[in-house]
Length: 346
Image (cartoon, rainbow, N blue to C red; front, side):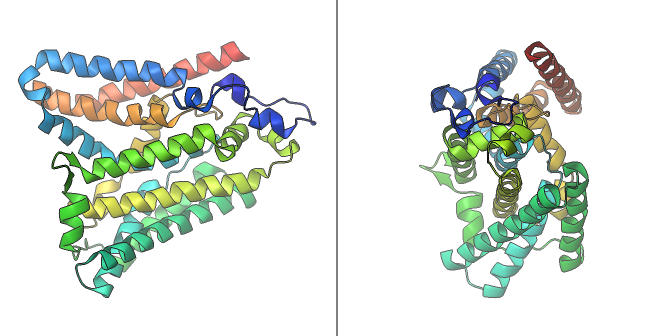
């Protein structure tokens, strides 16, 4: 939703209707927030630029498929991270929770044995359960123990990654059912669209609507916009934070399962920067680090901007290291523009 519709009254008698105010904006308008449109235009501009420079290589179904597949797992992480950052929090543990969930899911599927959907569903349940558990721990530390989100999730980052290495001895686990790899990991819907991409976009759509059109979403914005007014309006801020961090954890678990499906191994050392990449994508997508403003659509654009940059640089012969420079510059610009927007509001 827009910042105006999400800003709560500062007085102690702020009614719940001020938070749920359905007359403010229709949910579909909140789903496509104004800041998301500008980020989307930047993404379109990048696509047009690379299409002009290398039309034969960049503009192809195969290349588009590669970009989307590379971004799929990060998109699932970014969706959960969006909810957290909208509450003015942060979750540094998502990459480690991804690894931990993938490791235990792989171990669970190996213990069950077989190559059927029953075994795969067991692995999915374990991954989601592990992610949810770490999310609840994060939520408890932030909401109940009153530990800052940065420190709390930095601590669980180390714990989750360390336990994953203890379980595996630091060695990647590759006993993954081939059916999982051949269907979800490498399979395609209608022979064209990777299932990984389908799942990631379904997650983005479902939780985009949840954020824009439900009371849970409105309360998430409310906590980030004015925590004290939200509490005085009769809403349990602690419970909302617990739910938000639990959601981010569960989505990290799902991302871990999808990563195992894609690579057919746990790739323990391959997710060291996933937390920073997810935060970068969310902030580039227009979600404010100060809370109260953001959208899932913006995060989708924020995930694809670095992916398109890296792919385009490789195709045009530019050193891919410039992608980090470009993304860093865009990130700084996004935060600076957010600060200007907040000053104008104040």
